Length: 220
Image (cartoon, rainbow, N blue to C red; front, side):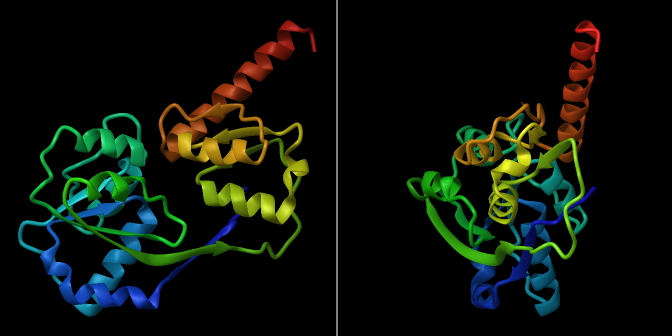
């Protein structure tokens, strides 16, 4: 059952950065939402990118969203689809001549910016606000929960407290999300083998299958 915990809204002050967007030759996109908000603003205001523009993304989901707008990323992690994975990818390239732009949410991590700032010029700006979405109906009973981001966990715990997750199967999409869960004292059953939606679903299936096998072995 999809259960939205996050509300995303474009930050009006962000548009000031578009007056000089052509000066950037590398834009880093950390989520599909970042891609959508950026390109919606670009298309609406008829802005153009530099002729030699390149894009970097943190995973295949973000890459797929970028491709919907006719662009392909030059930089994408090989396996660890996260900010840390992208940093590892960058280590194979000389980025000293890049003028980099990083649009992000108000609660987005700054690991990439910190790494690249020691190498070249980096401009970061808040593209959209990530706030808690209050449910309009009671939460259904559930056996397992899938968390796709640290903010989803934080907003869920803020709304329902951690006690509601006692005895539930918890699967998270990646290492950063896992760290957020552990900060709340949650026990994680599995971190997705691949930090994608399909990887998350396959990991849940694996947990459920193992649980069924264990129950059978116990004669339950």
